[in-house]
Amino acid sequence: PALRKPAGVQMSGQANAAKFAIAGAAGAALLIATPAFAADRDAGEKIFTANCAACHAGGQNSVVPDHTLEKAAIEKYLTGGFAKKSVVYQVTNGKNAMPA
Image 1 (cartoon, rainbow, N blue to C red):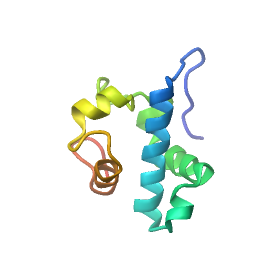
Image 2: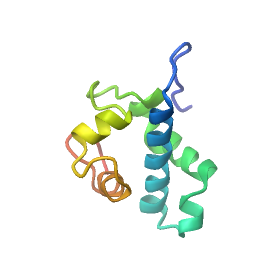
Image 3: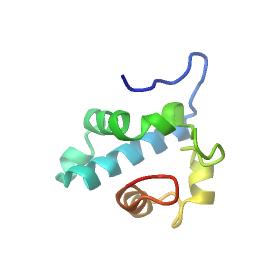
Image 4: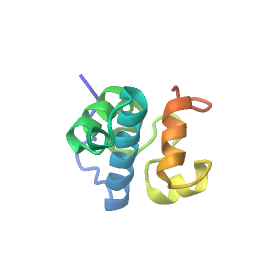
């Protein structure tokens, strides 16, 4: 089963927004879906759970702890910052420890 957020760990609104932005981008990149499907929160969450949650459970990062899904961390560490194009590129191509 997919990893879940540890009990007592709260995600900020920004982390939730980032999680679903990444999940939506992953859906678009991985499934080559129509925009309406990529924006579907449930589909994005399923994709995130299947492909991202092992390292990014609860919006965190188990491999590189400071590279979380918090907006500030994405702005700081993701080439291109907190933008759909940047997220799609990262999810599609991977980088360092993050697979495509």
